[in-house]
Length: 339
Image (tube, rainbow, N blue to C red):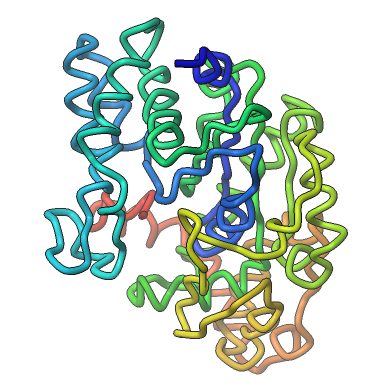
């Protein structure tokens, strides 16, 4: 076996950003590029695996990885596996779980320095078993929302890592995301969006543009050629026609829109949907709370929200939000970083 997987161990790309901001689209854009191994699902490595793994020895970490990193290779749409309930149509049964498991164990056991090596091994094992062993592979790619909060750990373990943070107009982001979490209020969402966006911009300033990039979803879908070339240049990978044709594990990807659309290519249709789907009061709340970051990212205010008769009510919602947030934390502690 070639020693290429070990060469790639310390060359990850982490896709970062708030849920429903376009992170899945970026993963799908990278999926079929011949220089990248792109994991087909979120691992939630830093928030789910790592807190449990830090107290375990290597064998314990590997056993945990079988349960919550490479478990997806048991997913079969004809006989859904435990944990597949939210994704009944996902099917990776063509990639043998046992083969991925053995490859991961072999790779991790060859040199284990820290729990991050388990993630590297899982990514490279998937690439090895799915025959993504091209000689010019440059990176492996993992996408999970909120990866941006772990940049210090990322660059400590993987100094050659790259982070791509996708940010989306918070009004559109809220419209999309509340279909998944209808109990979310605009102020709760805006606070979460602010935190995620602030972390992404902080990482850009702290680690520099050669290791971090912040990409607006709107620029990606409205001007894909320029944006995709920029991503290729940032990563130092060659331009490939596959970048314009999103896939998942090599199969056609129709998107994961919360509005049930299916797109065969990069589409700008979701941009500006908030103008029809969002109330003026909710738009005003988001604009008031997210104003500094919206201005920094050139998301302009809406005339309707600015002049709405409901602006006063929106201001009261924003003013009272800190108190209501403390109360909501007592009731919904697990909602702070939803998946």
